[in-house]
Image (tube, rainbow, N blue to C red; front, side, top):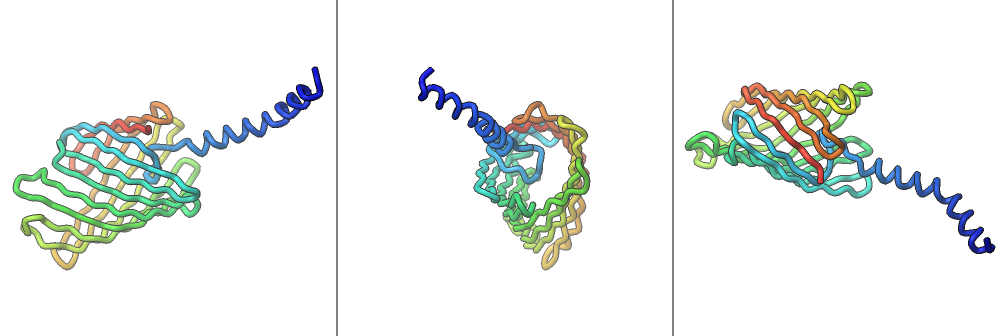
Length: 220
């Protein structure tokens, strides 16, 4: 073996652990828990239940400590739509978002809302996390059947990871309306989910509106 070949072999052996570590760090960095309410990734969802069929598509990018997510969601046999823009910070666990939607599922009524809010993750235990959010905005009816109303929404997500495959999530929220309709509405969702793998999961969702919805979520 000549000196050049020997030098090449030595350099390769010395650099192999560094390359392996870099690949593992890159893989870890790219790994996303798509059940996390603050996860930023590109993918979608297909849903079906007693309130009809639906689906969602989202586009996510990460740059340094920040992420950006744009999402459009359709529900109730395409009679309800929601758009969300979300920018979380990985270091502070804080996210700012714009959330807007429209619903025509009730004949003769087109209800709309638009809000801006903040969401903060608070680790409680190794497997339990709290995501606390507060939003402010406005709701209105397209044909002026209801008054335009300023709204404040306090919401939270309690996510418990049973193990690497199964998780539970509780999402209570309270809407307070003023300067218009006197809205006082409590709403809650409960999710039970299973990770098929790192890029796909299914979860069953129930709510205080007596809905039962099966969701299939995936990452591209």
